[in-house]
Image 1 (cartoon, rainbow over the protein chains, first blue to last red):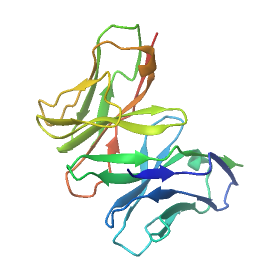
Image 2 (cartoon, each protein chain N blue to C red):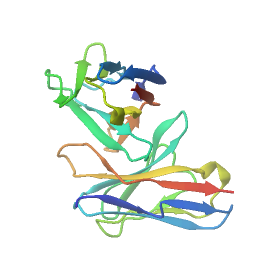
Image 3 (cartoon, chains in turn green, purple):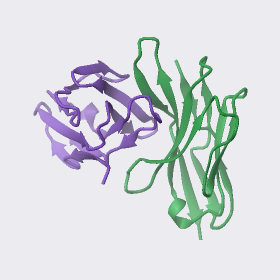
Image 4 (cartoon, rainbow over the protein chains, first blue to last red):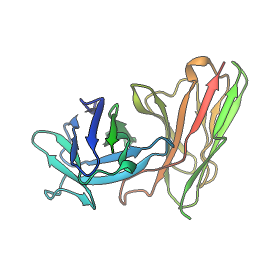
Length: 117
Length: 113
């Protein structure tokens, strides 16, 4: 079964600086999708960025980018020019599809990011 | 506005009293899913539906039921809630075989005493 590991329960960063959140996953599939979701205090789950495994180019969305290392099964999220509004819980997720066709997102346990002014 | 809605947003109930949490999406998505979020465990899938009248169990289905009679609605039913079902519940949807990211509802905070 696929697993997703976020080894940093908590991280902090100074406003305007850069921070990287780590995520590793375990899978035997060759084609898959990975996501980072943000959960602010409102508890809404917000998609931050998506990466298709077949694409070698790392995904980028404004200040958010990923470092996707397929061989190492690593999918880290880099936040540049951190803002106070970036403070949230961040979840790494893997799209899992079984042979029977069942589909789900497998989530890591999350990293709580604090942004200090 | 494209969105997933859930009701109620907050609910406190007692053990054994049947309840339903509704979920509706206005994006014509085929796939819908329910997750529960517990501290230190992330989100875990309860049930999912690939389309109308097609539902299946996720990782933690015990104590829950679902139905999918209409494409837009996917209610979560707790026939006899117990305190271990106290949790934050999310409904999600996505278009089948397009971009694969799931769009989440605002969450329902359920407390069972």
